[in-house]
Amino acid sequence: MVTLAVFPNDALFAYVQKGEVKPRYFNPTDLFSRVHVFTFTKKEAPLRDVQTMFGSADVTLHELGHINLLNYRRMAEVAADELASCKCDVVRAYNPLLQGYAASVAAERCGLPFVLSVHSNYDHDARAMALAEAGLGLYLKLLYTKWFVEPRVIERADVTICAYRFVEEYVRRRPHRAVRTIYNRVYLDEYRSPPREHEPLVVITVGRLDRPRNHGTLVRAAIDAEVKLLVVGDGPERERLASLAKGHEDMITFIPKVPHGEIAGLYTACDVFALAMKYGGISIPVLEAMAAGLPLVLPRENIDGDIDVVRGAALLVENDHRSFAHAFRLLKDPGLRAKLGEEARKLSMKFEASALEEEEAEVYRSLLRLRRG
Image 1 (cartoon, rainbow, N blue to C red):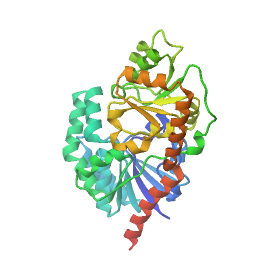
Image 2: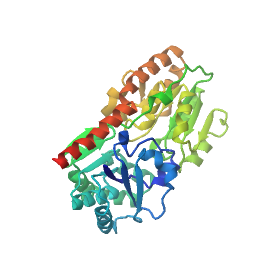
Image 3: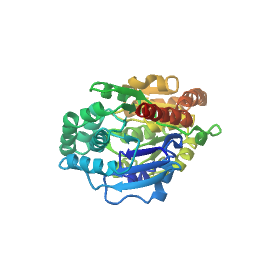
Image 4: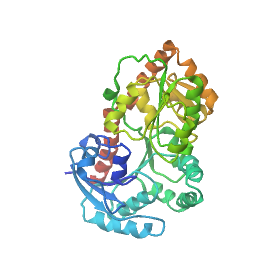
């Protein structure tokens, strides 16, 4: 019996709320027969709602209470005490922030291998997004973690897994051990679809509705180019975006929440995928859109670090509504859509779930072999 300790990025109920309950997300290839989940909340989602994320493993929840900058050192000790009683073989954390700090301390105290996932360039993206959306308070908290938390977590990790290539720069600036890039998995079979022909063109964008994701640019572009826009996601910008789309409700549709099992059907019902984020780079919606064979329209400035991922499948534009509108007009040409979409589907093969699951599982196996000598 091999046992994993998981410190998720969010409380499990947040994965349910965001529609991100994905098969074996925490247990690649069903490698682990038991998983202990350490979450910093007082009340978690029912296990039946999230079991698929752990595959066939037996799952034990450890609800440790809320963690913050005032108590994170004490909570790390609480986590270490709890972990010591679990007989785990390896520890995994999904961010280098307070949850990752607790995981790293607990792993070190118990003498266990520690695997860290990093999904964002916190230097370039998270702190800038915090300042833009949440204000000075969250920004200052993330500034504290930059100097006193994140370096310690990354340095303690036996292996740091970067979910995207553009994240590597952030990790490698700090003392680190082994670094691997393993992209988020896409279940390609869910995205197979016949060729699409819509009049007018249907563009889809997926992501939280906040200012850094810049959905207003796409709303304006869709109106200018006279194409339909499907906006999937929810957040603080919802009301402002609805106001921006006023008078064009027949062209702009908002869908606040979609379970993961249904998202593929939305992609395959559309013609084009667009993203206008001001920060970050390649993200899971981009990979999902590629699997669905959709041509992409993306902001040039954010894709440089991952250009090979989308080369030949995307129109890269300036991040303003006129440039996006021009790209949408170009993609009314079915021949161009077919050419870019075919290349997108070919490129997506490298993100096929079973191969990436195996790659992630091998990270664990290699650490377990070292531990057992």
